[in-house]
Amino acid sequence: MEQRNLLVTGGAGFIGANFVHYWLAQYPQDNVVVLDALTYAGNKANLDIVADNNKMTFVHGNICDTALIESLIDTHQLNTIVHFAAESHVDRSITGPDAFIETNILGTYSLLKAAKKKWIDEPKAQGKPTPEHRFHHVSTDEVYGTLSATAPAFTEETAYAPNSPYSASKAASDHLVRAYHHTYGLEVTTSNCSNNYGPYHFPEKLIPLIVTNILNDKPLPVYGDGQQIRDWLYVEDHARGIELVLNKGRIGENYNIGGNNEWANIDIVKLVCKVMNAKFAADVTLASRFPHAASAISGKTEALITYVQDRAGHDRRYAIDATKTNNELGYVPAESFETGFAKTLDWFLTNDSWWKAVLDGSYQS
Ligand code: NAD
Image 1 (cartoon, rainbow, N blue to C red):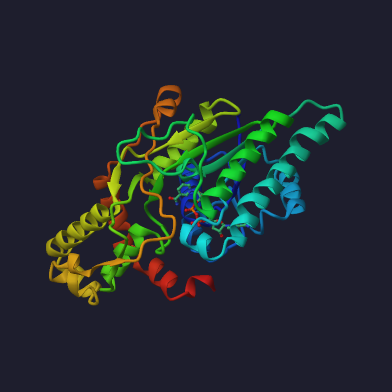
Image 2: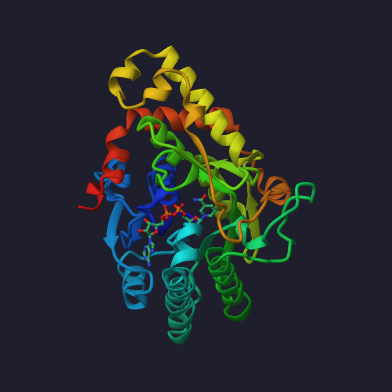
C-alpha cells in the first residue's frame, strides 16, 4: 500500500500510543486518526509528543458507534484499521465483565461492520472494485489458555481455550475477525502477543505497579506463590511486529508476537527490585528526587514484597512460539528483558509527572 491512512483504535492507551509514536516516526507520509473513548486506561497525555504533528488527528469516540466509524472512513479516506481498543485488565474482567463484552466483542463487531460496508459493500453496489484495505486486529496469547511448566509454547495452531472473561472476550473478537475474512472477504490479519511492558504502561499492571510502588515505598503485591510464568515483550518490539504483519503478513492469517522472555512473576519482581536498588546506589540525585522511596534509598526494596491471595482462575503459564512470524516476516525481538526494562525504568524515572498524574487521577481532567 503506497500511502496508508490509518485508524488506530485505542491509540491513547499504552500499546496504541506507543504504536502511534512508532508509526509516525517510520512513515511520516501516512495519516493517523486515533479513535479513543478515553476510559480510565486512556490518557491524552500519551499522545503529547505527537500532538503537534499535522499527520495525527485525535477523535474522542467509542468503537461501538458504527456510524462514527463509517464517517471517519469516508472523511479521512481510511484504508487501514489497526485495532487496539479494548478493556485489557484481567482483574477488572473478573469483577465487572460487562464492559469487556461491550467493547471487546460488540466494539470489534461494530468496526468490522463499518469496514465491510465502506470497503466492500458500497464499492460493489457502485460497480467499483474493492479498494486496497487492511483490518489488523491486536489480540493476546491469553486466548490459548494456560500451559504447564513443561508444555511447548503456543503456536498459531494451538486451540483456543480462554479462561478469564477478558481472554474469552478477546477470543470472541478474534473469531469475528476471522469470520469477516472467510465469509465476506474483508482483508484481515490478527496478531496474538504476550505481556507488553514499556513507557506509558498504566500502573495497575505488574511492572509499572512495582516500579511506582517502590518509588512510593508501598508494598509490592505478588499473587499466590508468584510462580505464574509470562513472556514479556518490549512494547516497541510489538510495534515492529505489527508493522511487519501490516507490510508482509498474509491476509487471513494469525501471527504470534513474543519477546523470548519467559519469567516467573516473582522473579520479575525481584529483578525489578535489584535493578532499582542498584540504580539508587549509582545515582545519588534519585534520593532527593524520590524522597519517599526509602527502601530503594537504603537498597532494601525486596522487603516490600507481599504475597496476596491468588487471582481467581489464574492461568499458570503463557509462552509464545513466534517461529511462524520469524520465518515468514523476519520478526525477531530486539530487547531482552534486562535491556527493555532499563529503558522502561529510565522512562518512569524521567517522566514521573506522567505516572503521578495517573495515580492521583488528575490525568482524567
Ligand atoms: P489499555 O487498556 O492500556 O488501552 C486501551 C485503550 O482503549 C484505552 O486508551 C481506552 O481508552 C481505549 N478504549 C477502551 N474502550 C474503548 C471503546 N469502547 N472505544 C474506544 N476506545 C476504547 O490496553 P493496552 O495494554 O494498550 O492493550 C491494547 C491492545 O493490546 C488490547 O486489545 C489488548 O487486548 C491487547 N494486548 C495487550 C497486552 C498487554 O500486555 N498490555 C498483551 C496482549 C494483548
